[in-house]
Length: 534
Image (cartoon, rainbow, N blue to C red):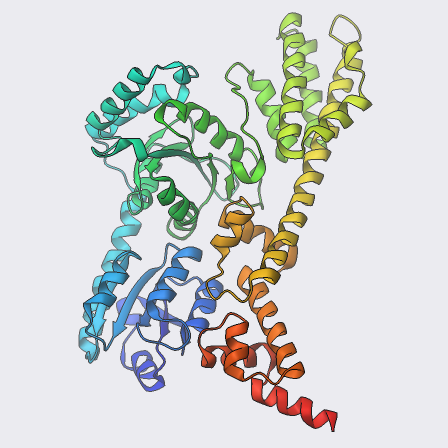
């Protein structure tokens, strides 16, 4: 059974739709209704329906703007327009938001029912496509081209002529499309799908599921590598900045809604050319290592680490495991890891010279992770607490050596954890500061503020919700209404002027938000204040 929210400012039409359509018989269930775009957006965020059926012309937020904002927060939702305005310009605007249907009023119950059946088929087809895969030679050819690029650490050494040749080969095998290749930038995302127990269940069929989402937004190619789907996205920098956060949300939400599973997604920084996608792959892998159960599903490396990480191709798997524990493990997990590592050493499964080499690499990696997250002062803090000029090696006391490196990792883990906590607090403070400075701008959005903070909208939204228990929109509305209340009580400005001063172009929308927030209209608020003064 698929869920539906209906949004129409005409109550008679809205109620008629709910009563006259046999929703259950055609596979739908109405779970909410809204009389304006503002309420519809709140219901979408709260109830997460499969389908939003909305009028184009509504108070406060139009259907077009509603579609845009819905795509920002719930990209998996299907959106259908029901409108009495036979104006093709509306349909043109709707195309970019992947509208599944555009129905014109007047329309009979039978016509709507038939269209809803078609929509249901499209949703089912999407579910089916997302869960299956038909291998083909084209994908194999792309895979053969991409694998060396992703895994080979020497791509940056190519000459300009070799880079141009690489682009031509990418076009030949379908990884890129002919055109102005010089404007393209690249991002690598890594997706792991997890079962209900948190175990990785990604397989080769998962590539198709991810591709179903990606093809709606950007040119891409995906391959399966050891329990994960690795996808190369290519677009202009503007295109990547516009769609990247929506893309990863769409993948995450689709895996959850369609497959009934969870996923972890790591996202690299934007790379300048194909020669750097190995570094992008490592960044995406480092980003995904921040994921743990019951935490965020999506991790942008730029949100977690403020500088580019070094090439870690030569770092042993042991080092990678410890790095992951420093990023997102618990103190107990680090201790258990070193206990296990000590048992392996005692059983002489690893040569002494190899272990000493790992410890040297470990110190370098600890510094790298701590510096990336917390900066130089944090590295110096570790240096002050440990005498690196006299580092123990396995030629001496094994137990003491292991304890020494364990303590370094525990301190690094605590610094990283604390810094991320502080970074979240600073991020929230910056967001509130920007809201306080720019609340009067009617176009101020989550994307604008996240850009100023140099983080992704997904990350900023998650941090705000975790730290403040509110959404960005809640914080912005709160500031606007508080300022409006101040102007109402302390000035003689007209309601329309106050609305504009507080970021509202529409006085009726302002009055609606004001009453929703304070429980009374702007006029009533001012009147009560005057009466109380007397």
